[in-house]
Image (cartoon, rainbow, N blue to C red):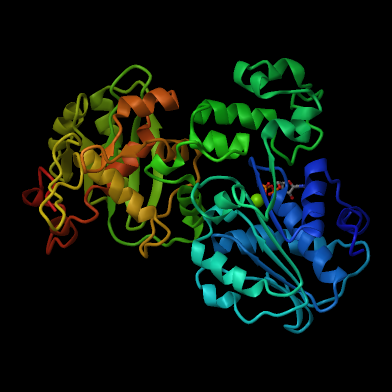
Length: 485
Ligand SMILES: Nc1ncnc2c1ncn2[C@@H]1O[C@H](COP(=O)(O)OP(=O)(O)O)[C@@H](O)[C@H]1O
Ligand SMILES: [Mg+2]
């Protein structure tokens, strides 16, 4: 049992393993430190859960610590798989694992598997066992202090550490593991997984659309995938549509590679994923602010985003509307959400939407010209941002930085994720500069409309005049034409 984790998975849990899942198990059996990066949906979390049980039941008085960037990932993903495998084991395993629990005890705290949150590195202290396994799921999103704490417990002779996940973020411990000695590493791209290899579907087939000729369909018209629970060519083709092949989300979630230019992305992918992850549990309070990005040309869409406090409630997109029709949609949403303010990108056609909204006395409309200058100065009086656009994108970045306190939550939407992860920045003249929208557009293959709408709702976040309105926030006289911090 100790030497055959794959056998345990097959015989005990009835798993239908595919080769990379087996390799992951064997790497942990044979190497003190394993790092495995892969695309979305290859069964990483699934195999990590079985790994936990194999270790715990194979080594008497062993300890397993598991963690992930967010509690939802610990509780609802990894431990859901652990509970499922434990419950359906062909031989009853014993041990104490209550429903929804994230702790499985065989003999109290001395022989147990435990799910830990990454809020407090101190929680990782005080565990000692001759056989200790630490599993870090979605390791790219886990902060450095947690890895330091983990290193502190890996002291006994028979210790194992595995970091698995999407390679969403460069620079951290997960990234370094692939560039430092002492780690056994592996990677999986979408085209190495069963639903691709079964039909001989390659990367090129996804890019060209050729995959549709190679894959077979069932009589009912659905695609016939050998392991439909894993990533499919259809999923990858959709990702290509949504992000394009030069996007960090494509690299991480389809290619299983770290994004090339990740360090210059305004918002790292892993921060966006965490923001989407906390959305269901984030309670929205306060007034609603709408952001409106108005389409500038043929293929662009208009987008309206609604933010209530630290939660983006939704983002809606519209094609083919003229300014009057779009203003009509904004009015409808404004009244439906009882919003206190709407920020409209005024460049180009946006001016028409603003004029239209200004005809209504109950609408508090602010025109935002993102190319106007930013008033923010550092302590020496130097400009911090190239323009308002840079300032607003940077504010959004700060609201998503896991090191902050008041973290923004985002709805789970691939298009929005694509938009927010696309823009890059530079420090060209000593100030923060965000690339032109046109440059982002070229790489993304479309305009980041949903991302801009969210950015626009963010405009007044630090605007004390608006947030501390003493009375009647709807009244026109409080309207502020330009942002001043
Ligand atoms: N060998 C397997 N047998 C049955 N179901 C599997 C297997 N591997 C993965 N799955 C299922 O496939 C889905 C995706 O797996 P998951 O572990 O969440 O992928 P990842 O963590 O790589 O994104 C889950 O629903 C999981 O239960
Ligand atoms: Mg997973």
